[in-house]
Each structure stands twice: as structure tokens, then as C-alpha cells.
Amino acid sequence: MLRVENLSVRYGAVAAVRDLSLSVGQGELVALLGPNGAGKSSTINALTGLVAPSAGRIVLDGQDISRVRTEDRIRAGLTSTPEGRHIFANLTVGENLRLGAATRRDARGVRQDIERFLALFPVLSERYAQAAGTLSGGEQQMLAIARSLMSRPKLLLLDEPSLGLAPKIVVRIFDFIGQLKAEGLTLLVVEQNARQALRFADRVYVMSSGALRFDGLPSGLADEHGLLNLYIGG
Amino acid sequence: MDYALQQLLNALAFGAEYSLVALGLAVVFSIMGLVNFAHGEIIGVSAYSVFLAAALGLTSPIVAVLLAIAAAALAAIAFERVAFRPVRYAPTTTGLLTAFGVSIVVQNLFMLLISPKPQSVSILNGLNQMWFFGPFAVSSLQVMELVVSGLTILALVLFLNRSTLGLAIRAASRDFATVRLMGIRANRVIATAFAISGALAGIAAVFIIARRGSVSPDLGFSLVLKAFVACVIGGFGSLPGAAVGGMLLGFIEVGLLVALPQEYGGFKDALTYVIIVALLVYRPEGLLGQRVELGDKEI
Image (tube, chains in turn cyan, orange):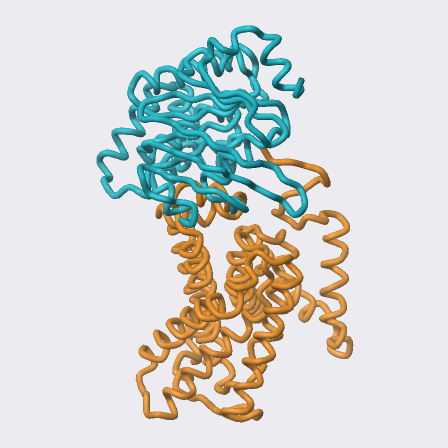
């Protein structure tokens, strides 16, 4: 579904991502792991088009989208839940969900989807008319993922869904991610929390210092020392 | 009583006009971080469109009002397309200088193509009459300014709270990149904000023409400075702040005019700014602005 070929991202003289190639197949959950500053978020931002890659190709469903604007990539079925959640704090929970569906024209389907997420996350239902900024971190993460799903994406990129959350909440978030995979959604999950990310992953990539260090099955990373070595570049 | 009522109406009418123009500045600033000092020239384009249409034989005041609003909205969209879009991602000072540049170019176009001197426009004079309510005589224009501004603000609030594009504008005021991640086109959000800003300026232009009965190349400039001050009082970028700041500025000005003895009337502006400075010492972020601590990161 998604193929990234020789992607590089530079910020001035700094190379954040170097010659990265990866792929995500239909219905797969692929984990992209790596320490802070490895270039994971730069990769995601290049995939959504918020930063322009300095080299490489991004192919979605056989179409080269490297030069396509962010808005049109979302319309093509690729959506990302950004790092730090970025819910619209000054809008209500309901308004956040409605904006997530901004590209859709079927008002009835949108209402049904909103009701589905409210049933799934009762706390969002309780806070429906309240400013989203009043939610707790975990609730905001659930809202952010639900908002991304409102556009009915084919491929969802999740950037650090565990960031800043209590371990119990992280487990719940990943339970939900596993459920999304079971429903047939294709996912690329960027994480520092390797243990959670590997629970449902079909395949895993590990980055550090902007380059790919590992590409294979989660079982290949089972040895934690192996992962540690990859993280610190040993 | 009559005097007090008259002054109250004065304050409300001035305040309403400042609010309209200040909202126009704020709606663009809130999403782009651009202080559009060419906003006065949007009022100018609107006023000169009415002048030209009247010179070409237009006589219907209703058509003139619609023309004023449409011309202002189109001018705002054109300014964005031609001047502000190329510098959208440049530092804010670049945007500010661009706005001043647009302002100077357009003012000079009015001077070169029409005349540096004020031109008489009488088509909207009918809006400015005296209405008698029992013993009270009030200016119809002032009543209309108040009512129309109120309705306009209500319409704006409904738009921003109900429509998807309105929600996107509110969301973009905090986090433009994430609005794009919703698949909402940045260009459309920005063009809409400019169109709203222009329509608000067009409504203000109608009132200016009706009151003055003439147009001149710099007619919007001093009003935009006042609107800028109103935005600062209310908290820059906050839409409710702009409306409240505009009203407050109207009340401060008229209040000082009433309170000051005739021979000190010249101190009105100076004292207005003293009051505003005192206000800002007390609340540097403005009345309804948000305090941003250095180093704060919104997650």
C-alpha cells in the first residue's frame, strides 16, 4: 500500500533522515521504532507532506505522491495522528470529530461514525460539548485517533501514541490500535515504547541517527540487548 | 437626558464601527499572524467602487451597499492572492512590510487614477437622517451602525461555530498544520478569512461614506490604526477581544469628550492612550488575550 524509496529529509545542514526505504502492505501493522531524534517524526512529516523531502519517492497505492500537497494526500486516504496529539484545544470534542470528517460529504455516515466513537469512548461522549483542551492526556490521544479515523483512511500513521501517558493508558491505547488492525486498517506506528508497539506488529523497522538499522520480524528483536544495541548504534 | 442618551449612542456607534474593523484585522491575524495594515485600503477600494459606480450613473443605495461589501471582499481576496500568499511562510516582519507596501501602492493608485482630493459621493446620504422617538432625536446612521454591527457579529459567530470552514478557521488560529492534516485546504481557509475580513471592512465603508458624503485616498488609514489599538486592548488574535476592545475604545473616546472641559478637548487622544497604556500595564496580554509564557509548548 505504501512504499518509501530512498527518502531523505534535511533541515539546512542537518540530515534528519538518510536514504530510508520501507514499505507497508495492505492490512499490515508496521512498527517504526527508534530513540529520540532518530528521524521518526521527520519521516512521518515527509509522508504527510508537512516537510518536503530532499530526495526520494513516496508511493501510495501505486501513485507517486511525493509532490502532492498534504491536503490531497489526506484525501487520497493517508492520515496521520501527529505526535503530541495536537487536538484543537479551543474546539469542543464534537467539533474536533467533525473537522476530522471535513473531507467527507455523507452527513449521515459522519453522524454514524461519531456515534460509534462516542460509544467506544464513553468519556468523549460525556465531554462532547466541552473544550477538548480540558481532556486528560489519554483522553486527548483517544480523541486524536478518533478524529483521524473520521476521514475513513486507508492508511493511518500514528506518531508516538504513548507520548506522555501513564503506562495503564498506553496499554489501553494499544489495545485499541490492535482492534483497528483486526478491523482491517493498515497502520504504521512510530514509537519509542518498543514493548507496546511490538504487541501487534507484523513487521518492524528500527531507525537511529536518521538511518535504518533493522528491518524484519518482531521475533528478530526479541533479544532486548539487540534492540538496545540498535538504539545506541552499537 | 437627551444629551446623555445622545452621547451613549455616540459611544455605541463609534464602538461598533471600531469593532467591525478590528474583527477584520483579528480574523486574519488569528490564523496568519499577519497584521494587515492594508485593511484600510480594502475600505478604500470599497469606497472608491461606490464612487465610480455613482459617477457612472448608479442611483440605487441598496445596490451601492451590496457593491461596497462585494468590492471589499474581492479586494481582500485579491490582496491575499497577489501580495500575501507569496510571503505566507516568511517571517512576520516580511508580512508586515508587505502590508504597508500594499497600503502605499493602493493609496497612490487612488491619487493617480482618480484624484488626491476628496471626491463627493452622495448616493448613501439618505442613510444619515434624524429620527424622532417622542422627544428624542437620534441619527439614523448611528442606530443602523449599532444594529448592523450587532447582526454582523452574530452572523460571524454562527458561521465560526456551525460551518466546517468556520470551525477550520477557529482551529487554524491555534494549529494550522493539523488543520491541513484534516484534509482541509489551507488556501481555502485563508481566502475565506480574508473574504470575511473584507466584507466586514465593506460594511464599515458604507457607514463612512454615509457619514462623510465623500471619499479620499487615506480614508481607511486612521480607522485601521484605531482598530489596531482596539485589537491590542482586547488581546491580539482574539475575536471576542477585538469586538470588546472596539466597543471599549468607543466608550473611552466619547467618555473623555464628555468629561473634558471644552478647552482641553485636544487632549482626548493623548488621554485615550494613557488609559490604554494603564490597561496594558495591568493586563499586558489584553483583556481577553491569552498569556503566552516564553518557552511554553502547547501539546
